[in-house]
Length: 316
Image (cartoon, rainbow, N blue to C red; front, side, top):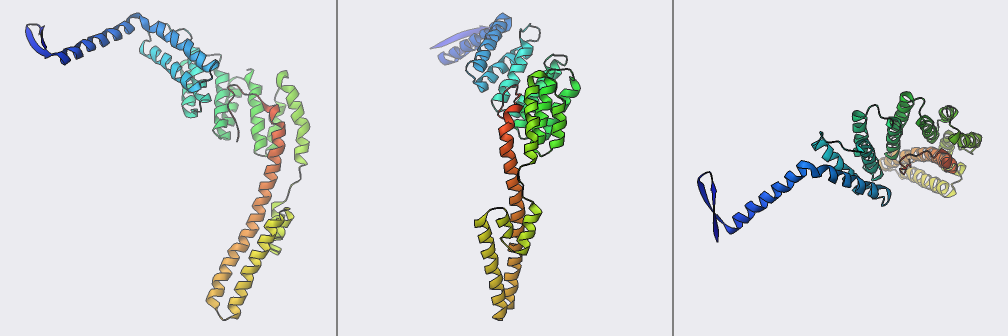
């Protein structure tokens, strides 16, 4: 079966399947035209409502980000239309990306918000949420910079004290107790003041935690292999260090006594490396134990620093 199609006096003979393809093409074009002429705004609003439900009710942040992205795509393609909630959607889009674990895309979305709405009342909040993302990325320096930027930009904002609280926590994580104390004393919001007072009472106890001196551990290991590990209350490690070094030294002496100087030199070099490694091991284990004790204590007071906005899992 075929059909004759005339275009400006030109007759084209087409088969059945060719004709079907042409008709489908016209239908598709008609659908696009319908979107372009008025249905687009309504569909964007429907997408907005659906995305909010995904974000708040279902907590399906990846799908929510996709739907908010669709809304923003509509707005970019039709800037002449009036899209309600556009500022809110840009914020929700960035939040959904962050909660979905797409941190770099979220940071880009926050930056785009700032460019489009530089005078928005949400700018301070966005800076704080960007700081949270940096913390979740295990980038404390970037987070501290962002929180400091917030405090300089909006010194009277309600988010200022939250930023100081997060900075104080980061300083404590890094062992910078003096800087942490300075940040805590900056906080004025009564909502956080009670927790700050609890932290201030807990800080002296942090300084009194039993610590092992890494230099002492290394020196003891130099005087007698294994003694540094015994000082750290690690008897099995001490026993291993003592026996292994003793065997290596004994084997080196035996090689020279048996008139095998080449073997003795090789064993001596190996023992020197093993002996030095024992000293280094004792020193680094002292640092590790001290840090673990400190972190265990900080975990007890961590709830006092809760000030999250988007509630990311921050653990660094």
